[in-house]
Amino acid sequence: MARPRTQGPQTREKILEVALELFSDRGYDKASLRDIADRLGITKAALYYYFERKEDILLELHLRLHKFGSEMLAEFEKIPDGPDRVAAWPRVLDQLIDFLITNRDVMLLHVRNPGAIGALHANERNRLENELLEQRLLRILSSPAIPLDQRVRMSSSIGVITELFGDSGFAFVDVPPEELIALTRQVLSDVLRMPVT
Amino acid sequence: MARPRTQGPQTREKILEVALELFSDRGYDKASLRDIADRLGITKAALYYYFERKEDILLELHLRLHKFGSEMLAEFEKIPDGPDRVAAWPRVLDQLIDFLITNRDVMLLHVRNPGAIGALHANERNRLENELLEQRLLRILSSPAIPLDQRVRMSSSIGVITELFGDSGFAFVDVPPEELIALTRQVLSDVLRMPVT
DNA sequence: GTCTATATTTCGATAGAC
DNA sequence: GTCTATCGAAATATAGAC
Image (cartoon, rainbow over all chains, first blue to last red; front, side):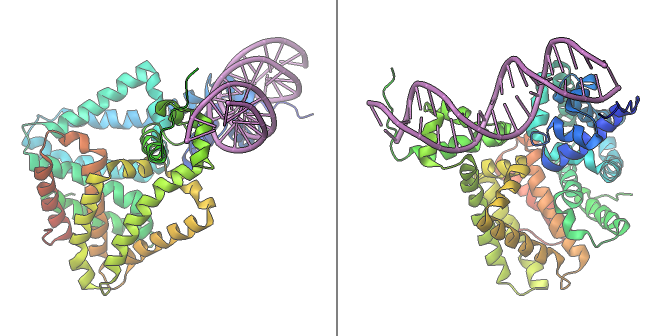
């Protein structure tokens, strides 16, 4: 009969860590609480001590992205709408690249679980936060103070980054990261018609 | 007591249509056979007259993309590896744009259900077809006969299209499709450093 | 803080009547 | 071709002991 482990306060963090990996790996629905508990050497029921529902684990992971998006938007929105924002866009792309490289797992979680993430909308507070973030980005990309052509290019630049560091990343695994980043900046410069770093 | 509807031979098509919508909308796992049956006004059991397993519905939808990808790759592979392929790439992008506009729903199904689609690998024939398609695209983008810079740009061009007509499409709903396509071609020309149409 | 044990729900799938 | 009825598995969630 195994004695309780008493892992202490960091157990909560470990749950989030393991959940992030399993949710990303095999999908939110396919990763059961039993899977998570087994890998941590605890039982399913113990998880309920830290999180009331399975969904709450996903929610907490989701909010990490909220945090990044919100901070980035807040910084960008300080800039007056118009040409100044176009000029500042490269800085946004830089931060996005950084985030994608250091938080690959959180992004993967979202890319691979849009349905489960969408279900978080049942949570009132989360839904409002989400809609607000989307509106803020939409507002930036819809501004009449920026020519349509430039807005299409700002949007395109996001696509370039997500493609090279996401879906098509496998095609360039042999390329040293620094070289790939440099080439990406070249492409982004051409997309935006202005230098990127 | 409701009399059987006897919807006739087009019921199979309707099932695929509704399944495509629900699978894309809320995710494959979250869309139950009950959901599909309810929307069609039939019962769960009736679905089993047309499809042996739930997975078979997804498989049939998935093969639509196989068909498009296979045809496009076959055409492109006729071109000798090297500069000729770089020159022919814009034509590929044109076909991709056409496909995304007319088959938005099928693409969304795949983008939003990578896990379920991946599980189709259990089907031997499908797995082999899939791996072959991936290898063919990887081969194109990994060719030593094309400079790395150009290959990164070919990959980036796919990202531009999927972003503008996929994730960020909502930002340009007010723009007439023809104008958006024209602007997209402009961006693609800059990405590839050659004219696109 | 963790356990055992069990309740509850949901879903894919099958059997057999009509 | 469609129905009712039900099975079995798996998952989320709860109750209560230690």
